[in-house]
Length: 231
View 1 (cartoon, rainbow, N blue to C red):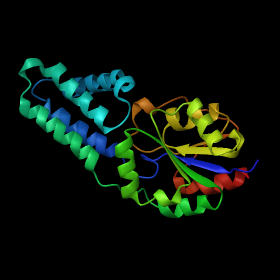
View 2: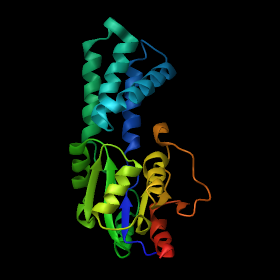
View 3: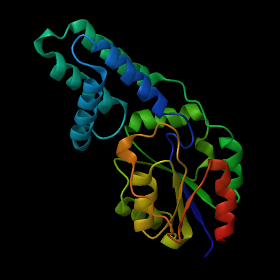
């Protein structure tokens, strides 16, 4: 079966992302040092994020709200307004950070475009994802842009249908086992896992070792050869 549609994640697949969230987290832990140990603050933040994802969704805005909630939970009424202002500044920095492409992304996209239509499939805040895509300069390389609230098997089935391909003619590649690999496989597509350092624990999942339509790659640059081999 020839691959006709190549779906790609954006954050930490095409450009750096997680390191900016880690920088904001480190800033928050420093702000909250008078009120809680770093590990306690980190665990509280993670719990807030997990609790708030169904309400705020993914992205910098929801993360900023979770940072504020963490601060109020740990400091209570003694939380200085200056600290809240500093957290908001950290959130704005998340929204304004420069977009830095991973090594070799442009050349790899050009190779992939010779193999099938490219579609960007990313989740998070609509305005922020659009801004990052515009700043990346990669938008013209994609036949379609799909910014979704979450990535599920149903999400991928709808995308495959929208672009007129059978699931077995589509591949999804990204750095998240939970969001990129497992739902694409469940929808009947192919999936390539391209892990990055310092991955978010929320995006982990059981690796489908031995699955006929799955592979783990060392870098995005290896994806064209794998897709070509499927053909």
